[in-house]
Amino acid sequence: KFMKTPQCKSIPMTMTIRKSGCHDVNLKVKYCGGMCQSYYIPIPPVSRKDRRDKKVERLAHKICSFCKPKSYKYRNVEFTCPNSRYGPKVQKKVRVIDRCACTNLPL
Image (cartoon, rainbow, N blue to C red; front, side, top):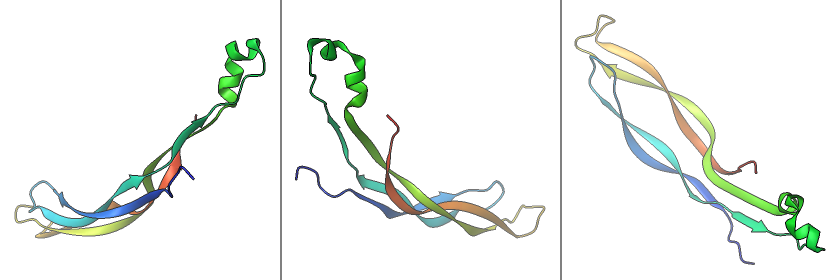
């Protein structure tokens, strides 16, 4: 076996969320990171014409994948806003990464 098992996972981090007229909020979120598979396995040409034919290139077995979000969830973030016309507390819904997975690129 020359390929290791893909390891794409969500990794915790802290992100600063801002809203005009409000104090910043530090939110614990996740980002996607890891290693996914990519490879190219050629199909051997049968004849000289096959070597020049682009169809042989298209028939090769190719995979290129990358680590990206698989699902998201929404979190309510509450801001303290001393200068807001909407009141001292303002809520904002923020989309954050829930899970990550290796995803193939169309080739």
